[in-house]
Amino acid sequence: MQDAAVTPLITELVSARPIYGYRRITAILNRQLRSEGLAPVNHKRICRIMQAHNLLLARKYTERPEHIHDGKVIFMRSNLRLCSDGFEFACWNGDIIRSAFIIDDNDREIIAWRAVVNAGISGSDIRDIMLEAVERRFGAYRAPSVIQMLSDNGSPCIAKDTQVFARQLGLKPCFTPVQSPQSNGISEAFVKTLSPFNGTRSCSVHAEHPALSSRAGSPDLHPSVHRGGNGGARVGHGSGWITLLRAAE
Image 1 (cartoon, one colour):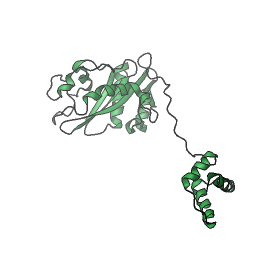
Image 2 (tube, one colour):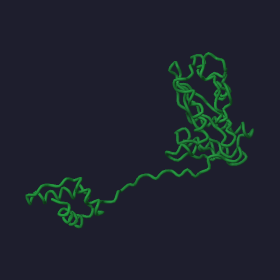
Image 3 (cartoon, one colour):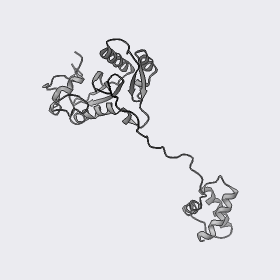
Image 4 (cartoon, rainbow, N blue to C red):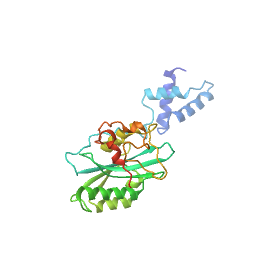
């Protein structure tokens, strides 16, 4: 049958059953055609005809719109927004070092950080670096004014205890939107700065001292670590960035 002969049949069925999609319309139409001794019609052909005549059902869900990145990523002066993020290093001996840090949105100073070996960053670690950051910046246990504390949606950051503790320190918890890491661009830039030193060019860690070494010439570090950094996140030059991850003695 030609499309011109099928179209009136489809229109009649859709008028009688407006909530049916092209699959059900095809089944009913082919049942009628077989009863008349005619060949059935392929469902893709029915879909094409219905689409050409605007007879298809409207989609229940539409595609998610893209995020419009029109927010303010960097502030014009320090002590207005603190950002946090985390990363990990794979070691030659199989250990995994995970670290979390807090960086100022303007001057990009790493104010506080924590590192653990073969374990995850906990909410207690996040609260510790929050307190340390406030103490180092303001010399008190509470910020003089409300400061944004931007982080991702990880469980240590969104925990109720962490949010309550942040407000007690004068910090306002803020979180990046879903699928929008660019909203925390300052922290992401710092992690990206360290990424060339990760992966196959990672450090090895001795069991008696399971943390990153702060010695520039230490044999514990891969030689590629000693080369100069690009300074994009103000991590210093040469081996100076290693002091940002100095192990607690």
